[in-house]
Length: 296
Ligand SMILES: [Zn+2]
Image (cartoon, rainbow, N blue to C red; front, side):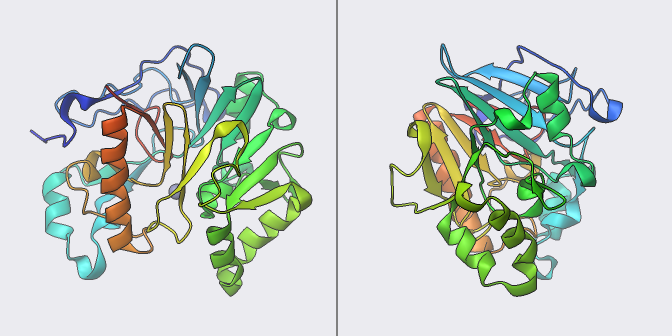
């Protein structure tokens, strides 16, 4: 039996609303096998809704059409140093790793966290929004956690912005890194520049930079400017984990996507502890099920 580090502190949120349309795939039931501390969405893989407080709603918008898993080898580390450990902890050979975006409705505004891989690449975000009656034009604020393509891929359609009315917020450290990365950063720069005056780079030290009292926190390691966002009880944990079922058993295990594994491990441990102490609702872009963990 696998052991969940956080034991009964964590439970995945019950779903109030389910809807699925994109891709026609209707089931991605996944259990993490961790002593039943997580009850994963068994009925739908499209949209789910939780109430953060009496008036603030958080929607999970699953960007992939059906279940998405990644191979164990993604977590082997440099020189395959962790391969034996990973295989021991994940005997099925793969790990559930969805792609989620999150929509928060707060004070009459719609705040979208990340945009998935984009429609052209098969991303379902726009279909998920449509299924809850939200048009791209309705998005007031777009908060980006980092510039990997599975997070900013949905910002453009061709050369046109997908969310024309959104004020877009990105960490300036992240922007600066990709701006000096040459060819590797070209797509990210094209995407950011397309938003013109609507794009706002913020500093992690400026606590008033974001709308609606939302705070950004630096969680370096996955990328140089990897940002988490906090609003009331909500902590959007971005890519702190890529294969929760595996990494919750050993937080030292990193996916190949963590650009600085040492920093990524520090950030992962710190923020999971922080969320546990503060009893926060965690929303992760690659978490299984509806991507939400509630610390009780
Ligand atoms: Zn990602």
